[in-house]
Amino acid sequence: MLAVHTASNPLQFSVPVQRQIASLDPGLPVSDVLTMNEVIGESLVNACLSATLVLAFAILSLLLASVGLYGSVLPDHAAAFGTGNPHGALRATRSAFAVDAGRWPAAGVFGLGLVVSFAATRIFQSMIFGPSLSIL
Image (cartoon, rainbow, N blue to C red):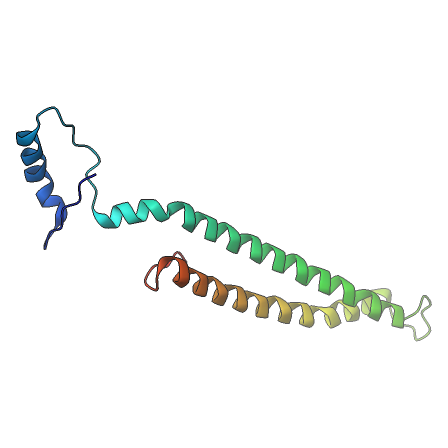
C-alpha cells in the first residue's frame, strides 16, 4: 500500500504516481487507486450496516413493547364493565372505551422510546465514527 498526500485533487496525481512506480519497477502492478475518504468509507460499511440493523431492531422491539403495554391495559378496563350489560351500553361502546384508554399510554411510551433511541444512536455514532459522520 502506498499513500500519497496532496494539496489538491488526489485523483489527478494517480497517473503520474503510477508512471513513477513503473519507472522504478516495471513489473510492479498498481491497482485500486482510491482516495483516503474512499478507503475510510469502505472500512466503515460494515459498522454502518450493523448500526442501522441495531436501530431497526430497536424500533421493532419498541413497537412490540408498546403493543404489549396496550394489550395489558385493555383487560383492566374490560373487567370493570363486568360480563353483563347493566347500563344498556353496547358491546362496541365498551370496547371502544377500553381501546381509547390504552391508546394514549402506548403512544406516549412509543414516542418517548423513539426519541431516546434516536438520541442514543447519534451518541453512539459520534463515539464510533466521529462527530461528522451521519448514516441517518
